[in-house]
Each structure stands twice: as structure tokens, then as C-alpha cells.
Amino acid sequence: MDRRDFLKTAGAAALASAVFTPAFAKGKSMEQKEPGKDVSNVYFTKDLSAAGLIKLYKKINEGITGRVAIKLHTGEKNGPNILPREWVKEFQAQVPNSKIVETNTWYEGDRYTTEQHRETLKVNGWTFCDVDIMDEDGEVMLPVKDGLIFKEMSMGAHIKNYDSMIVLTHFKGHAMGGFGGSMKNIAIGCAGGRLGKKMIHEYVKGGPTKMEPGGTAGWKTSGALFMETMADSAKATCDFFKGHICFINVLRRMSVDCDCAGLSAAEPKCRDIGILASTDIVAVDQASVDMVYKLPPKELHDLKERIETREGLHQLPAMEKLKMGNRKYRIIEL
Image 1 (cartoon, rainbow, N blue to C red):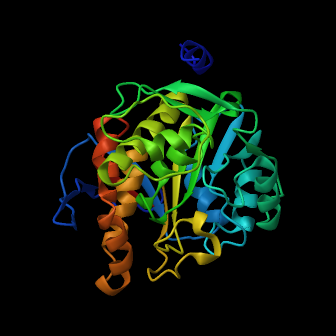
Image 2 (cartoon, rainbow, N blue to C red):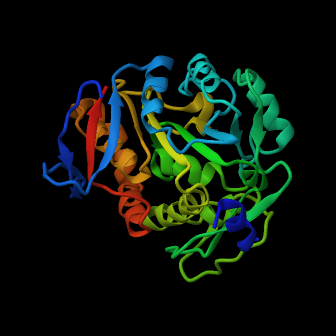
């Protein structure tokens, strides 16, 4: 069954060969070297530039064909930490038949309506290619196979127009998720602004899994449960693009706040680290967390506190339980 039918039925240069099996106990990041082949490749470069992005992309782009969605968090107006426009412009030019894709927000801000969103895109300089606001014409349900909470998730309807997706993520903290990696980028970023995001943020244990769009934005879901509603949403997108999706995390200007905080985002205390890329969403987010947790305590403190007070590390076992990927990985440095 191809993804069109799927939708219809649902409505090396340098090599560092260490394999990591991370675990977290009492808030500490621990890594254990382990031999074996049951691991995922995660490519890494310290080259924080458009060239670095392109170099890693060429290692993971085998399944990227046809019409390509580049899922990017384009940020609130004048946000200081969003990915540099010139990097993304040069990167996007290397991907034939591609567009940046976004969805509207559930909270009332600079990206709440499509009109407001397009004005914000202009302010932030995302004018060098078409940007598709995927829920501009409504939402569509995608199935969540063996979901932790949901059986389906409401996505921007235009998602059906694409054959492949590149998840290009600014890795950073997040007010509710603890951290925002590839999973958060597509979990909230592909969900429709009127229903999908409501499902993720408003679900309460024992409550209905079916909701109606509309209403004032509320934030009822939190902690480990929020990580699971996000994981279900990300699972729907990953399954839809199965074999035709890849993930790039940029570990740069890692504030404790998401790019949705705009100018109010806290100044980063962590040093810039580099770029990670994989075809495995679990491995790339696990590797990103592990690299951050290796930072000196003074740099790590605020971001670690943000992650752990929100139970953000639960994102990783939640995705693993959904069989979205592998927490064991091999770093290949380019």
C-alpha cells in the first residue's frame, strides 16, 4: 500500500564507531558502550553552516523523492534563535521540488491565522521559496498505529500533497515538552492549528480521544502524558512518510525556550555543538540529548532543569514503545 492509499483508508569521512545505549536515572544522562549491529546510524558534523547541513543531508536522503516538504519551525516575529535564513535558503536550493511547510498555531499570536502567519514569515525572511501553511484549507485525519493515546491525529490537510519530508529542526528547550527535537517539530508542527494541536494539548487521562475543533487554547496536558500525545502525533506523520522521511537536528543557540517564544526567549547558556542527522527519529533525538548532557554543569544547568521538570526525557521511551526507531545508535562524524 502506498501512502496515497494509506491516506485514503484513513479519511564517511571520519568515523567514530562508538555505539551508545543511553539510559536515564535520577535525571542523569548515562551512556554505555556496547558492540553489535542492532543500531542506527547518526551522522554528526561540527560544521554549523549551510555546507554542514548539505553534507549530512547527502548521507540520509536516499528516500527523499517526488514532492518534498521541508518541515521547519519558522518562529515568531524576529525570534533571535531560529535557524539562519541563509543556511536554509542554500539548503532548500539543493532539494528539487521542495517547499517549507508549517501549520498555524493554536494559541492566539503572530501565527494564529494564515494571514498573520504569512506576515510573520515575511518579517522573519522566509521569502526565498514557497511556504505551505498546511492547514490553510483545513485538516485531515491520519491513523496512529498502536497509539499510546490516540487512534488518529488531525494534520494540516496539505500534508497529503507531499511524497517525502525532511524534518529540519532547531534543537532547543521547550516550555511544555522540556526539549524540542525532531519529534516535537513534527508532532506539534504538522498537527492542524484548530484540532490537531488541541488534541495534543487538551487530552486528559480518561478523557475522550475524539475532540471538536475550536475553543480557546488551553494547556491541560503536561508531563509524561504530554510526551505521549506528542509521540502519537509524530508517529502518524512518520508512518505516512515511511521510508521517505529523514531528520536533521541543529544544536545551535539552544535556549531553554522554543522558537515560539520569539523575542522573549531566554538567552542560551549552552555552547553550540553541531548538527546531527539520521533516518531514525528516535536515534537522532537520543543522540542530541546525549550530546547536550555532556556539556559542563554550568552550561547545562538551565536546559537540564527545563527538560527534567517537564519530564521531557519521556519523549524517548514513548517513541521507542511506538516502535518509531532505535535508542541505540552509532555516531559517524563527518
